[in-house]
Length: 248
Image (cartoon, rainbow, N blue to C red):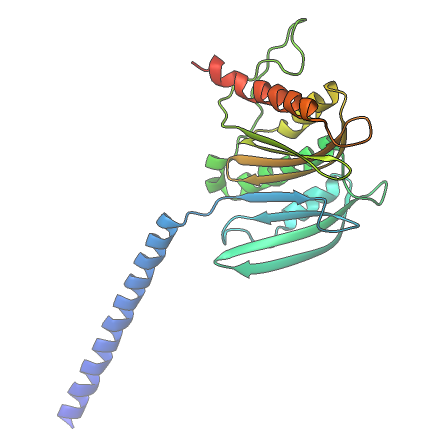
């Protein structure tokens, strides 16, 4: 009787120790995983994958909840949310919103509106998840413009930039990768319009502190000529990298 009781007590103690070790191991593994695979905030605005709506995709590891605040903010911007989808994969929760402009019932295509959506989502993300702040610039850099300075003027921020322009059948596809900042898309589109280009549509991807914008443009109703492509690349490179020289 005593032996049985002692054995049972020993077994219980061992089990408790095992559970404690398991919990400790799991905690360390999670901490180690978090250190090696630190999540970054992502906001992707896509006007190509769906024929009738602008698709807004938001993720930040497994930090984000139901995003009710984001839904409310999008509605306050005058947007209708057609439907929403949530997917989990590799420890990341991804929310997709299919949105339309409330006034027109159509996709959101204006660069100012796309920038407004992106900035609103990132602002909400920082408000509820301060750990995202290290990737997100809270405000645009100041710009000093004088009478001799147009949209290609001074922007006091250091950027790493890659620009590529590829002709397609009816338009040219312009891909820009650079350090993210508020107002970036609006300034880029303004620069393109200053070059007499027509902006057909734009997509905005924000991953951490990097912005990847895809802009479809035409010149005189068709794709850009090689000389115009070079002019566009040179102009945007000048605008986006000028501050690198000024930062020294």
